[in-house]
Length: 286
Image (cartoon, rainbow, N blue to C red; front, side):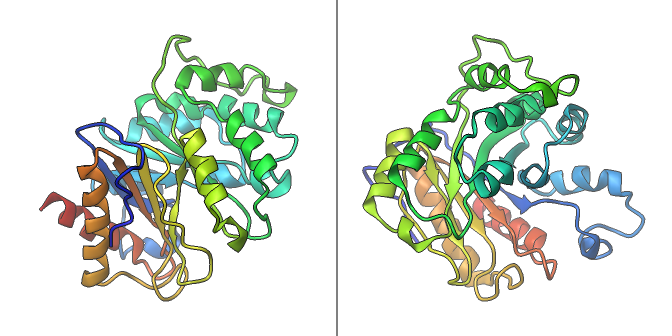
């Protein structure tokens, strides 16, 4: 499997691989992945010792509190990175229209308290949202490109965030803020979408969805992002040795070109995700 384009944007010379799971609070994982007797409060720390990244998906459903972001930041190793799922209020309810305040509220909610452990923000679009170049161009243009930009955007939050916001970022912090978009409507299978993402330097998510949704493989940013929802059965089936070898090759190809890679297993229904992630980490370390 090699989806890396030779003329796609390049990243850092010493590219890294971040491999993990989408979310970590799953009752069915207890006694299978999480050992018997482990406190729920310690599950993130346990997972972070075995993985190199996790997608925070609670942020998709509701704005989290600054204290939660700080607690999660402090629970994981220094080299650990979180990807953060952008709110469905922006993508699914507002459908990318009139989102200035919701975007500001999201970045004011405390996500920036992750500091150097904040990786890409994932924006998952609903399957009923078709490609609209003008709408998407406007949305991508609003996304902050640096931590300082994100804090400046957060400063425009509305009154709902009063007393529950955190965006104390150095105004000179030019650390890049990465973004990735996962689409689920077939109309996005067009060069116009690929070109638009590349123009805004936003990653096109490679989504493995057992054939249900489009699988876009173009490289449009200086990093690559994949979400593995299940090869044969959505959210349930695991990845065999041959499949994991192909994903390891995909990661190696991007890293050789200087791109960081982010890979998340979302096949959580049968407790495959954490074990598949650990197996892929082992391959990349070999």
